[in-house]
Length: 231
Image 1 (cartoon, rainbow, N blue to C red):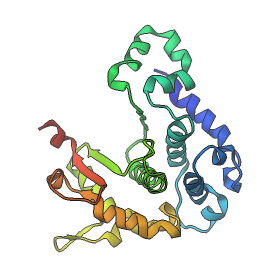
Image 2: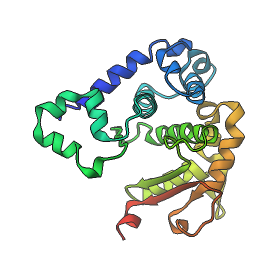
Image 3: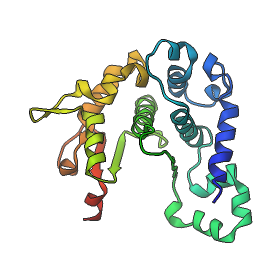
Image 4: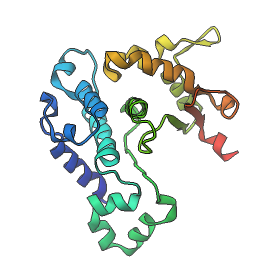
């Protein structure tokens, strides 16, 4: 596997994102107004220069690739994404075509290959903000959601995810002011939407022992480690 899908998609997104730093890129006219506002806030040079922290290039590519595949291309299956971006893979290998076309892949499915320590959680949180803000402004659009299942590979990452979404634990209570979204709000969320996102996250997060028991207001961020799913 030479990662043809990832390479081809990245090249296409790079072309669509030319001029994004100046606020004038083709992708801005291909996404919703809310998404365009977020992309400018995250990646326009004026905003970048006024912050002490920003997404690095790998995070930028990951965020843009997912948004482009999901919102611009509007792909609903893995096979559809391959057919659009890397059709040569389907044509060159019957085995690959069979795997990609399997029923288990018959839904939007994206994989971001990022090494440990490169900021996967920040990408996850940015994509969550993108989905939530669009859901609130496009009610009924099946392309967006306010329900998330975040699965960690082990307890260390599970605790890190809880810190990221709920804040660090102090005297048995989580302090949301120490969460990623609160500490780095100048990066993640335009000022006009911060109260909206903070209220959503604080009301939607469920730790693994609360999943299925905690009542939330029509939204959910369920955080678990994979062992919960295997039990």
